[in-house]
Image 1 (tube, helix red, strand yellow):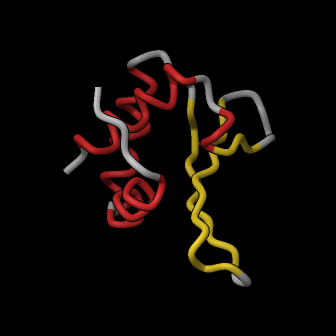
Image 2: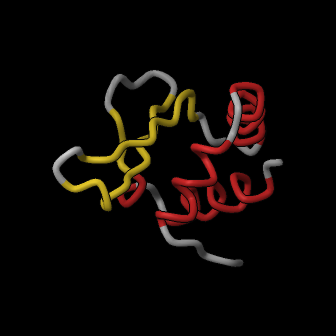
Length: 84
């Protein structure tokens, strides 16, 4: 499986329109990953640092991409990069 850097994934997610983002969430949920929202984020004081935060069903806490289970992160990468 191919692994992508966070900048590539951040840019890919930011390029998706609303319909594509909804479809992405649906595809992840169909694979058993209960993500209900993805939030891209950059720090104003360090615009080169990019993050993706994930919100899971039933939890108000955001999970940064680097704390996701490796299998979940790999699936997110794969599904996101397949999205057109």
